[in-house]
Length: 181
Image (cartoon, rainbow, N blue to C red):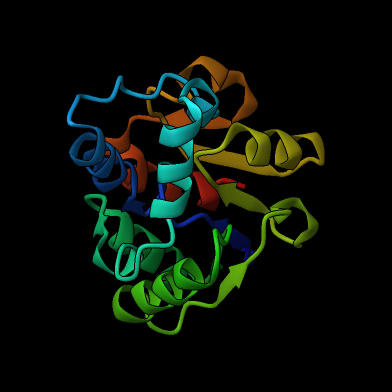
């Protein structure tokens, strides 16, 4: 089996940003947030809500405190054990998110390289694991595989991925899919 390079997004793929992010909204505005039905859900918020949500991404300690999805850390480690190169490729929101994401990876995935980059398609990789349809679309358009965890905000764009997987099974399946590349 040839070594593959696998780009792995962090939040929404390995760890859960949405739960604490929505909880912060609900604390701030004292009302439930409608579950995001599309990735661009910030566009559906009013100016004050959107400003709060964007600013909240820079809350010190936010990213360091995120919980990993079941099986995600082991799934990344399985890719490494199978002889592949896995790297975390995540978009920075600002200085505190950069610090927090590096700290999270250092604590949970020590030794796995971390790349902060919005234009993930510019990297050389064989497959990407990402929850954003844009990154999946750019990967598949250039002949690379794209795997993702299916959430309410991306399920309507399932055709962008090579495979969009149920979160509870994704990290059991992804290493097998990579072996088949």
